[in-house]
Length: 241
Image 1 (cartoon, rainbow, N blue to C red):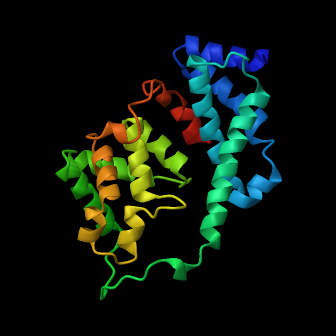
Image 2: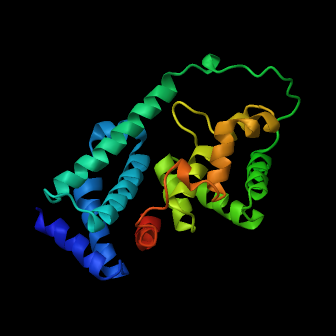
């Protein structure tokens, strides 16, 4: 086991993720994980996006390793592999998105005379959340946290929404509502291309996202994470980064 990483994680855990030990762990992540990122990943994702995503992934993994380390132990190389695998998944998703020709999307069969502003779409999502029981002010606040990027990858959105007080399930649902994925357009994207809101929010999958984001259907993504109360530890470092 790499003593340096073990000591940094253990010190941060024992301190309750206080700023000092957390800062030392963050500095280690910067030096051992972020700086050595491969040029291929930087080129595929963009240098700033790749570095910020690596920071978020590494910090999340350290929080998990502090509670449930593998039997074989952890090392900087082990952590670097976890980060690299997640970044490679992001690269594959981005390349798939770029290869998909716009004409492969189904053209809407309705007439669009004027596209509403983005703020109107976000406000409609907030009202849908309110209809499922989430206070309108809270919903708007979580949407604002999700949009307060970059990065705008799902991992970045999830991290920001969780820091704003949402559960893991809610944060994942917000990421799907606003960012979507390689095989599923987000509710926001569907509204932006002119699809009628009634059709968008009648979609069973979108309804599941709405219920989960409002806190009513935690089974959709699984229950709240065990580490939810500790993830605010890296707020100061992530904001500085």
